[in-house]
Image 1 (cartoon, rainbow, N blue to C red):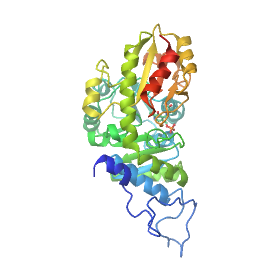
Image 2 (cartoon, protein in one colour; image 1 turned 180 degrees about the vertical axis):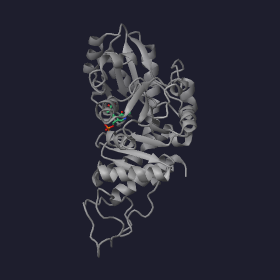
Image 3 (tube, rainbow, N blue to C red; image 1 turned 45 degrees about the vertical axis):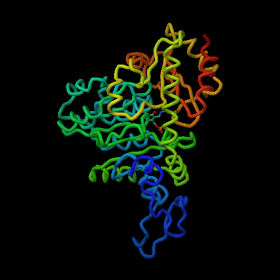
Image 4 (tube, rainbow, N blue to C red; image 1 turned 60 degrees about the horizontal axis):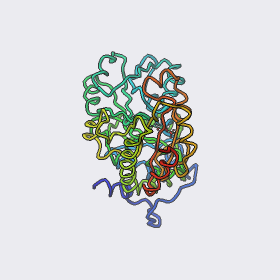
Length: 381
Ligand code: P1T
């Protein structure tokens, strides 16, 4: 099955044996009757498993070309489950530019439990190897990175991970499997904030893991059930519905992204545009090789790197809503330094380019002429 068909049908066989409904019923139940202890029809308790969630988990697996899919109560809950594979003393090598909440989870929660994190630039994957020790158990890659849109060569990371017997996990939130499939490139685990493009409508908070290795899947299922950060059946239904239009939404996000990146690049009041589809993007060739297109996430800095000017622009936008999050049908604008990345100390975030004048756009699927007119009136000329 090709991707566009999988987005609609992947894992969705026989979702309602009772009546044949085309969409799976929302099994809004915490528990299931048993005829005798252990005598159940496949589900015992909804933390351990729920038929609506199971339908979504099969769809998650299908779109990433994975055998196994797991759904969580948020993207961070999914990341939390991956780090719980580790023990005190273990080490993780992570991209240095990444979602602020992921950085906060790593440094404020898991460092307390004795897991050590190295945050490094991975645009040149060879950098990774000098941080590998006998204690390195996980390489954590976000690509494109949030918010600087750096591109990491997944295949090169996978080679290093395999050579040293390390798990490679890729946060594929920004790209989605429509644009990039990390498991096919050699990664062991794919993670998503399904809150974003997979859900696609800014109405659900959810996380996902997809993978092929059975023993790793068993461990992560155990953690999902034992720690209990699952999502509910109603949210599972909403994300299943969202997935069915992922491919058409992504196509438009990419088209609109391309026009807006071109518009911003030529604007006299914009100093720098970060979008992997631009030929001048330092990792453009890697992006071209591992992605089918370049997505709808764009960051930019105004001329003179002026904080007040950045705030004035985000306040003046009318169609772009000033808000955290991304990946919905509606366009959003954010100010990473004070919003999504506020939990990263200023010196740390400025090292990776997250300056006070940086603006991040999640380009939606509205008419691109209206979006450009909105940017024009907010930025001025
Ligand atoms: O918000 P949650 O569903 O828990 O997902 C966390 C997360 C993980 N990974 C990436 C790349 C993300 O962008 C996020 C969440 N990001 C935002 C809320 C944001 O506006 O960047």
